[in-house]
Image 1 (tube, helix red, strand yellow):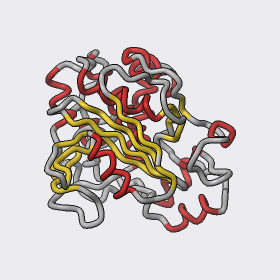
Image 2 (tube, rainbow, N blue to C red):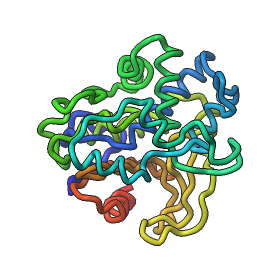
Image 3 (cartoon, rainbow, N blue to C red):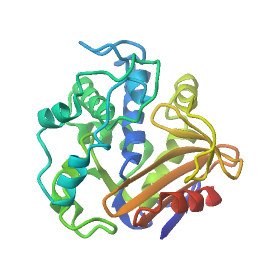
Length: 281
């Protein structure tokens, strides 16, 4: 397991370059909230031709389905196939049918975050990668991070199944130094990047229930692009975990101490990685 502990003065260039998996969602959320901060987007306006809002999408409360539960998706990834065209993905998920009324339930949705990525690119008038550079990475002083587009972009990275295509992560897969992920989260939550009201909204969780039997969470919740709540240690943590074929990542901040840690591990043992990161934060 590779572990980086990051505080206020750590270098963003330290540590291995790794896939950020679903920590990418926190970066997308930061971009959305930067556009809300600047008056370009509005959290509680419904999207065109849709009954859900940006807040619903950010908090996984839109009613949209996810593709992570499709056996045929995992089989295609395992066979090393090319990613399905978006229209085929949406058809296979029956994505036009909401699973519940927006705001009246919770369901993790990568499709929802695909919508958010498209919204950022359209509202900012730049491709998503460029928009993230200008809205998030540049202002927070983060270097060496990019959106993976092809198999070649992942060549040589640790903890990846050979031949994996990043296009299977439809909302986008960021790749960068492990320490840069921790430094980004630290800056996002502790530097004034967002005004106080938006930062409070980002950190305000929708409570998901009690302890998680196979993960070190006592009272998990989900804010706007943030997993947040009480860890099994009793400490409050904020950040995001993620995983894909061959590896897992976890990036968390503990507000009380102002400490941020990022961990990456080959394999699929998310519980062990989260527990290690929580001990560091």
